[in-house]
Image (cartoon, rainbow, N blue to C red; front, side, top):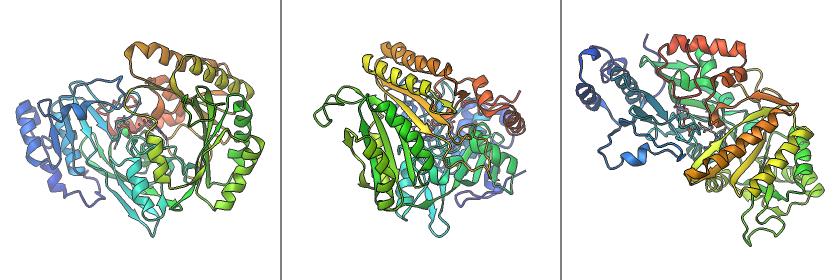
Length: 491
Ligand SMILES: Cc1cc2nc3c(=O)[nH]c(=O)nc-3n(C[C@H](O)[C@H](O)[C@H](O)COP(=O)(O)OP(=O)(O)OC[C@H]3O[C@@H](n4cnc5c(N)ncnc54)[C@H](O)[C@@H]3O)c2cc1C
């Protein structure tokens, strides 16, 4: 079956028949023939190890990965993506798909295979009247915030500009507008996907609906998503956005109060907390310099007076050591967030706890103190995940289904391989301590797990959801062509 093709960049079914190596006698062709065939109709760029740009495209944002693909294919449109998939199959090469290319397990790169790099496919087409946007499969958070912002709108994507729709929203997507709109997967109204067979399918509630459900949470297992239609909402040009910084001593009380506030605040208010060591610099109050602070990040997209009122209990009960919540645009804030994480060696882990109980808070403060002692450039991030999930339109996403739940994420960043053990050891120690807490749930979020673990994925999804996803995998990718992801094995 040729799928319904939903976007203007895609040509006719006849064009798809003529994409490289796809339809016919691939078995008889040599590798050189296959590559020549691919070059013939490819609109994007084909980067080989001989090209000067190769190194730039093969390198990963997370320097723990240093892989050397045989080719980097940079498709310009959906037809090129079809050609890339058919080429990799015919040449029997492993496929890695890269959108923002930041996933901490390094899934977007391969040794000796083909990287399908979607960075030429970053279009965002906003429909202001219906408050929706079509995002091409390589679009990044910054593309969405900038383009939607021009129309006084915003949508869900991560907190930084550099992560992309194919990674973030197809597999989760917690961002500043999540309390209002839900996680990224919850805001997806329609998708276009290229399957392992090189078919182009439209996914919507009334078309390929089972795959539409599964692709919102586990999409990379079933194909390459080339377009996503997302719901948007109104966002003022400037809103109250920024960070309240607290001392280590204030941390536990602040966490308890934030736990209350996130559940009672309006959906215009987004809040999360992280702890990290504050630079020992004059720009910061003395009480914080060189110590592990507790930072409450706030984005309020509603009325200014209401925002001030909603923040009042926190500001009054616990005056921050530094109050950086000011009027600014959401886009400007995501630019500032970008500056915190630059290419280096990185480690991320994640677990959901059912509630922010005293033992969890104790685990957080102990681990934050340890981060300071070890002089790590690291973060312990805590996010109330339940706000905004939509029980009426369930997706395959495993996390955030309990209203009071929190995500606990140790993230750490360093340069030297010799420091791997110290950094990863710190994150592992935190996860081990949390596992002894009563409210520990063992639910993971594949998007921020550095260590692929099929058993944990299975437990996180739950058996019923897992079996539904396995059935979809068998139908759409029985040979597991798309396995560089938090994988759902077909068998
Ligand atoms: C610095 C940093 C900040 C982060 N901030 C947030 C945040 O605020 N909120 C949040 O929810 N998460 C966040 N994350 C986690 C993030 O969701 C994942 O790292 C995500 O995978 C990043 O998206 P990407 O486009 O860079 O993914 P990539 O590394 O490009 O890809 C990730 C996975 O998705 C697959 N994939 C990519 N594009 C497609 C596509 N078009 N179709 C099908 N499969 C595809 C890849 O094959 C791979 O398996 C952050 C991660 C980092 C490193």
